[in-house]
Every structure is written in C-alpha cells, then in structure tokens.
Length: 116
Ligand code: 5GP
Ligand code: ZN
Image (tube, rainbow, N blue to C red; front, side, top):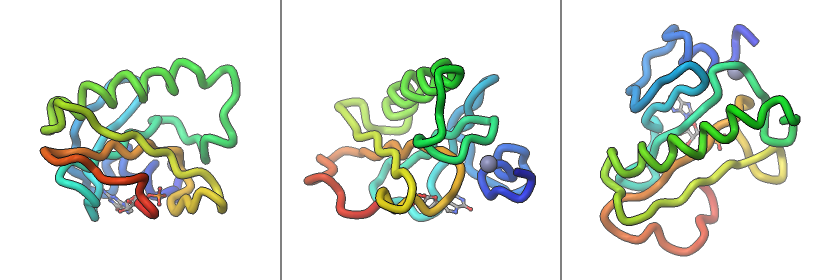
C-alpha cells in the first residue's frame, strides 16, 4: 500500500500537523477541519477500513480509542468529543486507510453529523 495517502502521511512523505505518535498509531490534524478540534487517528500499519479488521487488530483498535481521549483533551475538547469511523461505500469513507475522526471544541458538536 505504498501509494496510500495515509500510509504516505505516516511515513512523512506528505506533510501533516502531528498531534500524537507511538509504536502503533499516528494522529494528525484534518486538513479540512469540520470543528475547532478535528484530529484523525490512524494505525501505522495499513488497514483498509473497519470492515477489514480481525481479532489480531484488537490491540491497535484499542490504542486508537485510548489515544482519542487523550488527544481530544490536549487539543482543546476536555468536556467531551465525538469519535467517528466512516466505513466503506455506505459509510462514505473517502480515504481507504482506517481512520477515526476525533471532533470537538468549546461548543457541542451538534446532532449526529450528516457528513464529516
Ligand atoms: P473520510 O471521509 O474518509 O472519513 O475522511 C477523510 C478525511 O481525511 C477528510 O476529513 C479529509 O479532510 C481528510 N484528508 C484528506 N486528505 C488529507 C490530507 O492530505 N491531509 C490531512 N491532514 N487530512 C486529509
Ligand atoms: Zn494506508
């Protein structure tokens, strides 16, 4: 998956505004933020979507959620946030590398977002 957009961001071939990084995940600010806080958390290893995960992916999936909480607080959404994982055609996923959107900010994010 060398030409995958988010694989290239993880490798630093495409610049991104990093929010967090460890051995399993990379987090960076969305290029087109929908809310004051809008960070994407991705597994460093390519996984196409949430529809493709298996039992072996449980550690990285757990890590994604664990860091989501920390990142949201650090980035300015200490009173709550929303995590969204668009998946496949029906979920209107646009980038084919699993990613969790963390959205928040000082104000409530509103009703379930139609499109993020
Ligand atoms: P999806 O629709 O697949 O759930 O979300 C893809 C997200 O990736 C969108 O919110 C979009 O703004 C973001 N995105 C697409 N290309 C880039 C990029 O090159 N850099 C960053 N930081 N975000 C991107
Ligand atoms: Zn990828």
